[in-house]
Image 1 (spheres, rainbow, N blue to C red):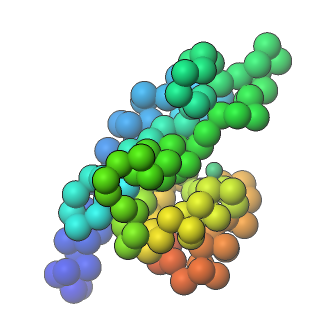
Image 2 (image 1 turned 180 degrees about the vertical axis):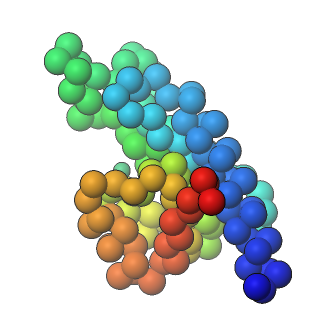
Image 3 (image 1 turned 30 degrees about the vertical axis):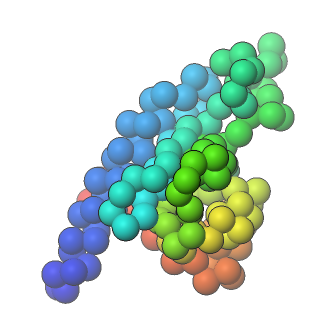
Length: 144
Ligand SMILES: [Zn+2]
């Protein structure tokens, strides 16, 4: 097996494990998702699902339904880098779950070139959209 590919897979797994650890920051009860944005071997941003800054740290309403203004981990990572001096252009996004279609649109527009995820989502339209935009999509199995 190709040595460079081996190294890349090792790195991918490590960043995905970091994304899982980062997901522990989420105060959402139904689902916790973490994301890490990496560029030139540097972590330039991170995110987990949650309400916008300044809002209550509760994701679900009294009926345990996720509030419509909860941001996904990917959206939080992308908007965080937008407020920094860095750029997501050409970056790799590591996310614990496959992106939904709304996040896929943001990923494309943010210039992210590679997406690595662990858990698949019930819908594949987000992944399909990323592939259509020629973004490299890698599914990682941590149990392997
Ligand atoms: Zn999403």
